[in-house]
Length: 300
Ligand code: NDP
Image (tube, rainbow, N blue to C red; front, side, top):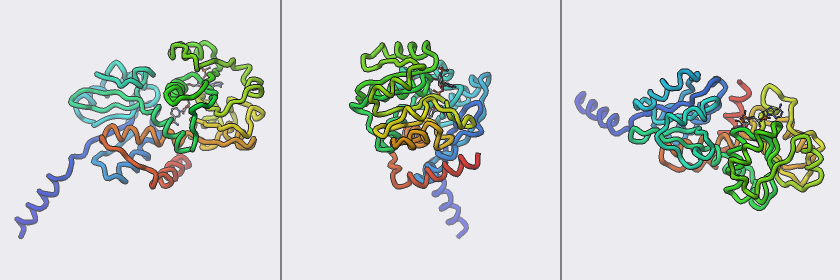
């Protein structure tokens, strides 16, 4: 009897896929929502992974990448300030990460470190989830940092008609235009002119890819209330808070709005698809997942 039980236990353990570790690295990292998001997905889809947040300072990055190469982890998410700094440690980067010069996801494949950037997929799926289609639209992108670069890359891919780029520092906006080889669908708008320009040009989609309005600067916004019209869709990449001053002003003017939570969820799902080599349909669990992330944001 005892023998049979032991054999059964052995069978169950050996037929279970071995558990692999995943983590998000950044500095700071305590407020990252990725552990909540990924743990929810891992639980729901019964995946053989654990996921943790690791506080990795710049001088510890080489050591961290060595741990990855040694096989301690299946993969990593990478957040501020390491998205660019990880590139020299990688053996291969996909086309998107190479173009953006930044990776937010790493997978270990046959001892090789492969870098990806799932922000582009996350942004596009986030737009779709919010019912926004940028194809054939005129879009204004505010900001010229890493997030704006991913947004522009995605918008060019998806067939936006014209993309206008507006950033406080003109030099950074020009550098971003140059990075897209001055594609003729891309134009720049001077930061001081943005209000009058929006009042004189019909822009369908306005995207905030600046960090203005992010917690704790709740009253900051990249546009004044008079910039919004009912025919507009306003999309804010920020998800903390869920309703920024930018989104509140847009909604009050009658515009359709969407926050950055959908993009956050979708970039995480895309990363999990890379590590697990599976596709996930999250439509049935979307509301629960969103609710869990909202609770985590309230508690943070
Ligand atoms: P960066 O630091 O690279 O860029 C910040 C941008 O904000 C720059 O264009 C900067 O302009 C602008 N900015 C900051 N403060 C001001 C200000 N006071 N007035 C005018 N412009 C200002 O950040 P990222 O590009 O990485 O991220 C931008 C935002 O997108 C963040 O809020 C981030 O949380 C969010 N994000 C959301 C994601 C999601 O999944 N939802 C994914 C990635 C990012 P300048 O060049 O003049 O300094």
